[in-house]
Image 1: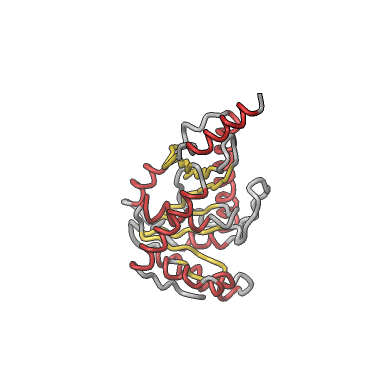
Image 2: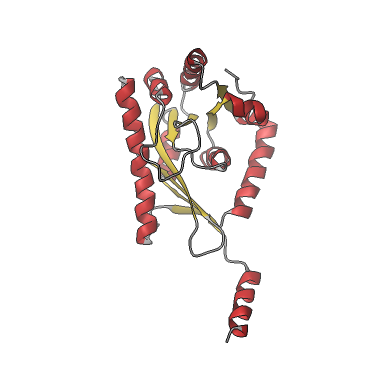
Length: 241
């Protein structure tokens, strides 16, 4: 297992850089359940289980955990990727060899020990790799259910992440924090429950987008369309008459 090497100074810089990258690339970020998460984080340690769909996911969770929720956050990461991108250890990532059962057991015990107080959060991408949002089943590994079983003080929160292009040129980010629940002491059942809970949040986002009503998903930011682009569209429309 590769342990985290958190640095407050580096985290502040890296999260600022992630914030700027997200704002440059995405037109908006919509989040459901953020107020409930703020209250919950003050009361319990939180194990987040979520889908993993894109390269952007780690930057999005840093934005949410550090800038919005303001929690002491950690995340499990494939050791191969963490060796390739070691700076993630400085913002709370710890690495696990997904092919080594003993290393996996060590990482799960480490994650469970982190979840010992309110204000602490461990984020697990339970699929262990990037998978398209539409894939069913999601293919959750059982490690997140084992962490939940061992971390007796923690509560489990399912989270869905989706990126969507719509009627504007830049894409949007949608994140839905589902209702918290207590861990199932049976790891097989617990893994199934976690996956089903994340699917419910993915379906919630899907229904909102299809219906054209994303009022449940509060915009953390929403960039106004570029004046230059609007002017160019009007000029093209005039020329095409």
